[in-house]
Length: 406
Image (cartoon, rainbow, N blue to C red; front, side):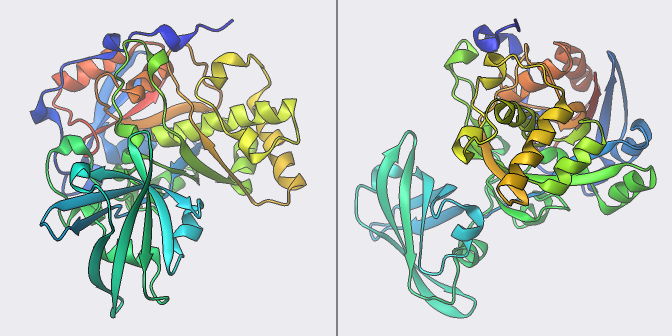
């Protein structure tokens, strides 16, 4: 029986983080950030360009290729009140790609800033997109938790919803930076390999990579593969409950190509994950394989990884077998890509299946990401964070990074 993490007290995962240690902007050259190396309990430091030197030739490194969308839209009411509509996830259609291609109407689940000033009625904004004058309207629908259904409509079939966000949306930088988005963030808050639009936050461990680091990794004989997890705003949601049992993890959408799953099998189900989003996706794959081992004809809905699922099913099937079950599912359904979602929470008591090393930034106190790191280093996170605090490392999204090898 595994240790049940539900009764972990989040207060035990705190550390002092003065505001001046939070990096408000990235370094001028991404790959000149500091790199903390944690190997089997020992801590040292280097510069990020040295990363390939610490990895074994023939390893498989996996990146999240999601792209941050300009998800904040601002409307001004006739009264002068400014309303912010923050697009969280698509509802109609609920597929990101299809939603971005819409040419008249799209519905999203949104957070609304200054909600009390938007009691009813449509919000309107006149704009010019691709040379076409259009009127964009937003109509508020039902409330879902802390978010609302919002219907967007516009009057020109030449313009897609992606076009509207590209021209009039604002990039949502993390709230803890305590500053407005600047033009430079459009470039610096995307990874150099970002491709698939859909995130409202960057997979920040990837922000350190440059073409020269990626080339150096390949020269070292390291296989590079990609998957997609669209990062939701819930990634910034603090744990408010005393025990983590009371914290509901947000759902995030993942897609993994057949070729990536095959590559994982070729590497005996072992990978180096770049960022906690890649970690969550890779570990979710194992639990999807467990579901398929029990029920080969599971529906897409049944494949979704629930928050506590890894702690409730005690299957010990090898990772390669789990991955082969996913390939079988794709074959039976004539699919090239696995599309599903995960709500997985990785906390001490979790037994990692696929991820053998990770590159990750330094996370907020009392966050689920700190729990994920603690689970990976067998509770030894204090050693890492104490060193980073004592040696001038920069913290959070635009901060420095670490390579963790337990």
